[in-house]
Picture (cartoon, rainbow, N blue to C red):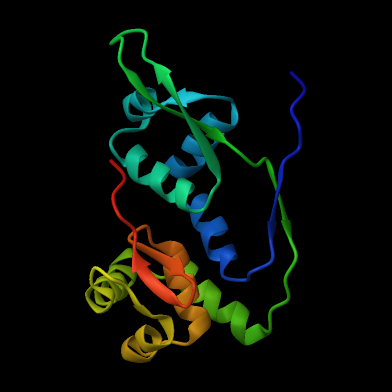
Length: 171
C-alpha cells in the first residue's frame, strides 16, 4: 500500500487561518498525526484524547482535512464513524499584502475569548437562514478578509455563496 501524496491546494488566503488553527495545540496535532497513521474510530479518539476529539473532528471535516467511513466496532458490535487524514501535504499558492497578512494572523492568534465574542455576534446576526456576508462584516465592524478568517476559524457557520449560513449539527 504505497502512500500517495495527496496535496491540498490553498489559494484563498483565508484558508491559511484554518490550516494554522488545525495544528495550533498539542491535542490537535496529536489527533491529526493519529489520523495520518490510518483509519481510527471516533470511540478510540475519544478514549485517547477525551471529548475534545469530537470538536476537533468537526473542525477537520469542515476544512476537508479528513475523510470518514462507517466501521463496526468489534467491542460493541455497533457501526461507528472512522476517520483518517485525506491530505498529507499542502501547496500554498496565494499572495498577500503585509496588511492582509497581519489581518489574518490577528484572527489566527486571537484569544478564544475574543474569538467567541465575534462568533456569538455572527451567530446572532445570521439566525437560522443566514445573512449576506457584507452585512455581517459591516455590523460587527471587520473587513471582508477578517470576516473570512473568522468564518474559517469557526465550526458554527460557513459561507454559502455570498451568505454566511449556520452549520447544522450532523446527526
